Length: 101
View 1: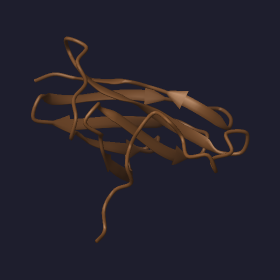
View 2: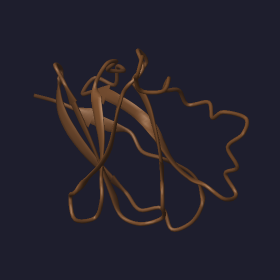
View 3: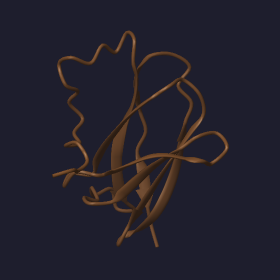
View 4: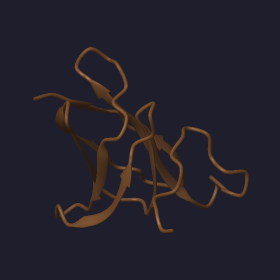
């Protein structure tokens, strides 16, 4: 069976954050509550689709990407939202996305 990897804020032990760029965060409603099950998309600097994951029950998501300009778009029954992040080097880069109708 094929599916998205389990999403959480905790990185697997084999991830070397000195060499890898990780974009992680949570999908949140306007009241700050986590939104589970949202479709979270990673778009490049030209708004081109790069990847998609499903947020965990606690709203967590994670992408492995290269340094650069990225847009995170969350789509859910609670609403939609967008955030940007521009990592310049390897490491963990956190960005939360607030969704609203």
